[in-house]
Length: 73
Image (tube, rainbow, N blue to C red; front, side, top):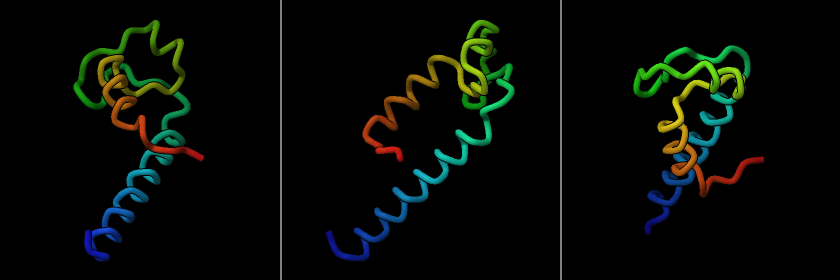
């Protein structure tokens, strides 16, 4: 991998990490009634249990799997 490609990959990783952090902060309060990814209604039980949730359980599972290798903090 050449140096420019490596720098671009590092910047992309940094941008994704910052976006994930910003999204967590933005949605700590009221849960959404519909998933922001697929539009499916989020069950009231999930909204009560996970304050600030914005994804249905299927989309959240996909997001968790996608972010499994990303270090936080």
